Image (tube, rainbow, N blue to C red):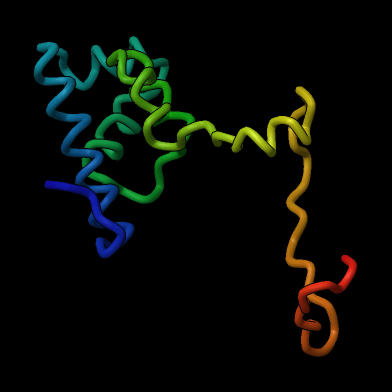
Length: 117
């Protein structure tokens, strides 16, 4: 099943759990064996596969690491690509803050030909 924005959090967690279970079974691992490799309890492994909310993200990451799935996380939250102009402005520095919206009070003045900027 494809994960979409219209799905509830619970449905997404269940889908992720089913995918973890499938990846574990493809590798012919028991829940106990994978839990040991990942450094989590068997109960945490069971909760992850059921999609229960009580699990921690760190446990999920450990299981994904043990299954060799961490390299796919880059597509989940890709690195931001700065435009060439933004790259020139930053001159090799990393952006630290969002600028917010620059809204002047009142209605903006329209530019007219021949008017200096």
